[in-house]
Amino acid sequence: MSNRVRKFREKAGMSQVELARRACIAPPNLSAIEHGRVTAWPIARKRLARALKCKEADLFPRGDDGQH
Image 1 (cartoon, rainbow, N blue to C red):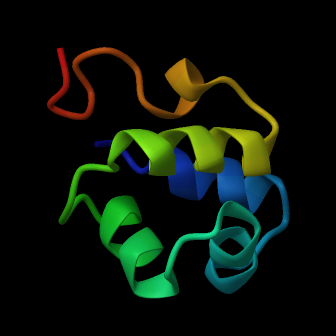
Image 2: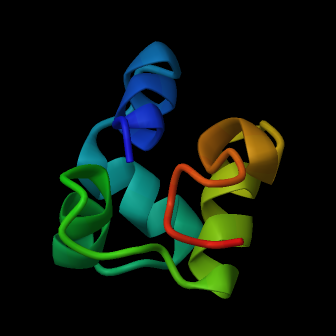
């Protein structure tokens, strides 16, 4: 992944902790997603998009996250 989550988070002016809280994701898990160590699971993808007020496809374009 190309750190789209981080880019959207920074554009929104949120810290990792704030985004994790809003998306109901543990901060270490958000960090792992941002750094590409893990692929965001489906519910996390939806929660992150909702918290960042964007489309899920904006954060996780087809083929950019190992999903097909």
